[in-house]
Amino acid sequence: MARGTMKCFHSQALPTLLQDESSLPLWKGKISCDMLLDENIVTSAEIIDCQPLPSEVIRSAHSRAYLHKILSGQMDLKEQLLLGFKVTPAVYPLVSSSVNASISTCLTALAEKVAVSLSGGMHNAYEDFGLNYSIFNDVAISAKILRQMYPQIKILIIDTDADHGAGTNSLLKDDPLTKTFSFHSYGSRKPSFMSDYDVTVARYIEGNSYIDLLMDRLATALERSMPDLVIWVSGVSGHYLDQSRLMRLNSEDLFYRDILISRAMIKNKIPLAVLLGGGNNENSVLTGKLHRNTIAAVKHNARAYASG
Ligand SMILES: [Zn+2]
Image (cartoon, rainbow, N blue to C red; front, side, top):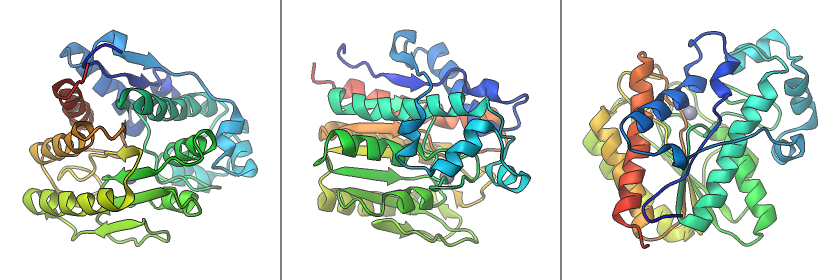
């Protein structure tokens, strides 16, 4: 890969799953991608479209019964309401191509030190059910596939999405070499599966306190886990206009966070795989822009610390 370039894995067909733009989590990657290209932050040569995966790959983290419901499009209404949209047979190829983007991002990060996905970070999916647009847990699937390929690899999952990544924690709890760090605010719900490094902050935390505490706790997690790969579920749901209403961060706070986290990894040559994670603003363009900012921050550091 040429100096300072950064592969961006994408599932270009994913937004076609929906008839309208109401389900923003599937659209925002496209919005961000268009912004990144229009502003020449990434080039079209850096964008790689991903294909659907065979179902055995998904089975590494999900039950046969759940997978069957998604493949056949036969899911009861209550389960579909939990997911947030209608499940039809068209869902599987599109969502599995997004999982493919996450796995490809991790493998490329190992080879080239940094890579990003323009989707993924679906940390609310469990073995046999999904929640809040998280159908398949691409974070856990990626970690499990890497474990099969590299039995000794030490993985740290850094989850800075404002809600808790309990689905990921539940799926990876039996892997001693994969550690999870989650920095979140609960709102009203407490999770059933904690992270290895679990930081709960007060609801409506503001920028300065957020950055100071996050970087302090993250340094401890990095020192203790000494990862060979970081999978970062970046998330922009801590924005004060996010519908989750969990934190009071502004766009500059989030961009500063993204600069600091990506610099900490890239400067120290810790392979970094970036997944978008949550973010559901009242304004879809703003959501796309916040994710675009994350990718721009990572790209800035990839360029600044490119070693040729
Ligand atoms: Zn989330």
